[in-house]
Amino acid sequence: MDDKIMLVARRFEKDELEQQKPVESGRCVWCRIESISRTEWRDAGVQGLKPELLAVTPNCNYCGEIIAMYHGVRYSVYRTYRRTDTDEIELYLSREVGT
Image (tube, rainbow, N blue to C red; front, side):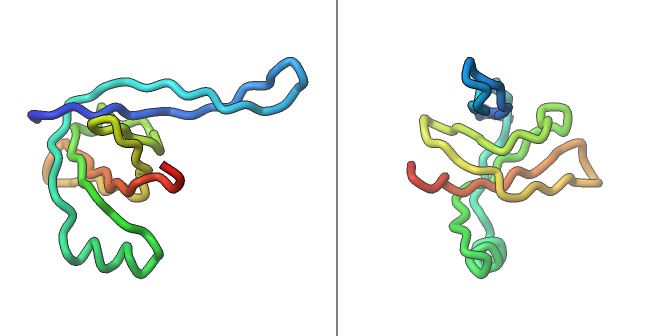
């Protein structure tokens, strides 16, 4: 693991008008950044996604976050894959719409 990524959790709280407002909190974790494979790029493209990065991190670092920040760019975690041969999880990232 030679890089860091910020995993962002989103929860909702009620404001003074009882409206749900998103509240985000992030934490940095160690990871390894890899390129997306051609097969992943094709399969995600069929679903209308544009995958950009693959972040590999130990299982204990991931708690279901749906947002990741890498070098100041905001990404959505659109898919995860928990490896069975190691203690790692793969986070597949695509750039968030509107950013």
